Image (cartoon, rainbow, N blue to C red; front, top):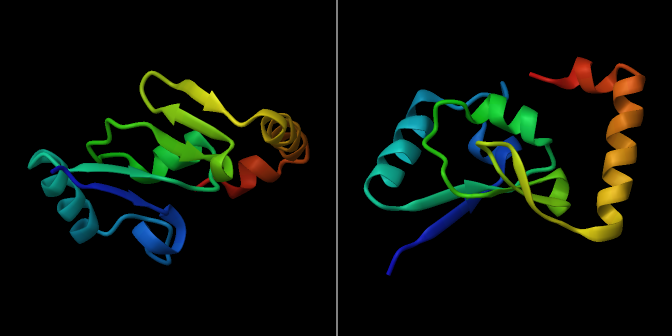
Length: 107
């Protein structure tokens, strides 16, 4: 039986500096290369999640925007969206970009 590990990013996989530690990166990489299944679920957007997980061998879809989207990282593709929450998320993201908030919060 294959085990799937699904991790949160902020406060779980990432350290207080919002980065992967070398040890965490090594453990996840060894786990995936040995046949384990690993992905993440986060409140982050796909773009900011990709920035902080760069270097990990992630091949499975991920959950972003608090479950609004299930996405494939490369190529960037939405596999599933959660209806009305999707509209709210897109509207919020557009507003935050207009206020400069999204740019100032990206790592």
